Amino acid sequence: MSRKRFLVTGGAGFVGSHIVAALLAEGHEVVVYDNLSLGHRAAVLPGARLIVGDLADGAAIDAALSDGPWDAVFHFASLSLVGESMTLPFKYLLENGVNGIRLVEACVRHGIKRFVLSSTANLFGAADRSPIDETVAINPHSPYGESKFMVERALFWADQIHGMRSACLRYFNAAGADPDGRLGEDHTPETHLIPLAIDAVLGRRPPLSIFGSDYATPDGTCIRDYIHVTDLADAHIRVLTQLDNRSVHYNVGTGRGYSVLEIVESVARVAGKQVPATMAGRRAGDPAVLVAGADKLRSETGWSPRFTDLDDVVGTAFRWREAHPRGYDDAVARSAPTSTPQRVRA
Ligand code: UFG
Image 1 (tube, rainbow, N blue to C red):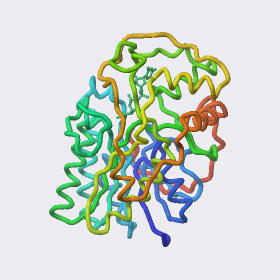
Image 2 (image 1 turned 60 degrees about the horizontal axis):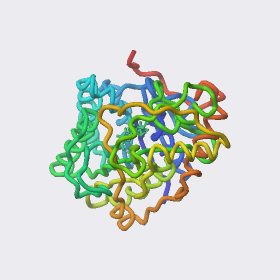
Image 3 (image 1 turned 120 degrees about the horizontal axis):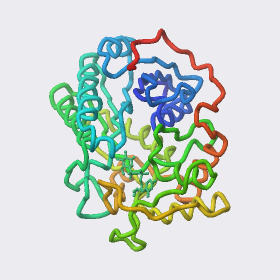
């Protein structure tokens, strides 16, 4: 691919920073737009430029988009805690949904031709079949999922009426970390299974609580499809070539599910010792099984996951977390050039 220019909102976050790494590795020019409220300055690799700005700041978005031409805009900036969205629905509908639609409108106005959205398997709620392919009915399970669907619908009309092509990638469970050890998963608060299990085995947190052991699954715990974040990044790059004449939707996962107990066993194998864990009640809103049917992505783009061994996925996450007990606070300050700071959300 010849050298291209990309704007990446949320490029200082977990998934966004790995896509930035993949774009830089292909020799592209990357500008990250992130308010650093959840992302980390140290997650923006040298080689990318960082604009500190908020999705709610229309003037700052316009200023960033004016500095084109852009070959595509990748949109990751969002809140992503399903549980939190069940208690603060309008925070999600406004910050993810409304601000996301404003970004879509601004992209249309600035003549952007391609847009890639970080969407979610939460769109499918408690699906009545598995694996979940793109034909499963959309029935968002939370305001978080609904907020992503709002942006998907805006993208539909942006295509129909203005011809802006888009790819909506519905991720299953993003996991792992950059195999070169430069990037990892650092959320505050951390709610995800793999980092919490790793912290528990490293003695940095209390024993892991296993949320529910009475689901209709072989071992009674929930099953998820854990896709390595580098494989996720590869999917983002491959879909770009699909956007010349049409918009696309893909479910992105490995097609293989693992139970919570299987994840705990994998962390134990990688760490070489048992994970302290206790059984707890179900967590509200957790569907029993979420496994992707990703055949469409495979056949139309030639994508396939490189990380097919669960212990390799967990191993990359383990090594980064072991080396960064305080997450990115431990990362050496990097020298990513920063533009004049824009207004930042308090
Ligand atoms: N779990 C535990 N104990 C914990 C944390 C999680 O047992 O301390 C269980 C959960 O109940 C669930 C599984 O581990 O069964 C995975 O939970 P995560 O919180 O790691 O991930 P989720 O499946 O809840 O959600 C993730 C993303 C969402 C996205 C969804 C799509 O965080 O943004 O995947 O599948 F919508």
